[in-house]
Image 1 (cartoon, one colour):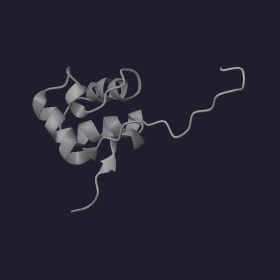
Image 2 (cartoon, rainbow, N blue to C red):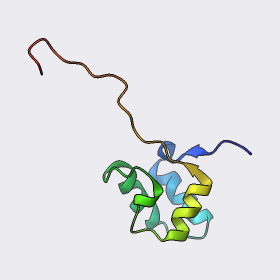
Image 3 (tube, one colour):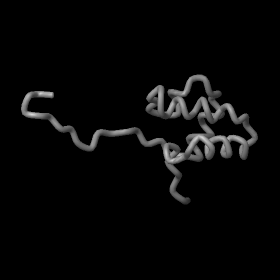
Length: 79
């Protein structure tokens, strides 16, 4: 089985193309994009305005990697 593509690597245009390819509406791409980049979803389950079936489909087609902090820097004055 091939590795799943990280959904965060898709642009809004690519998300629209994906939703069209599965027979769904293009506005789903905007909803998903907002969950990824504005609402800080940590999983497809968090995307509560998407149907359960659509969330399952996304989970089958993509991996969902959450953002992590690689390094934190602190100055000598504590900022």
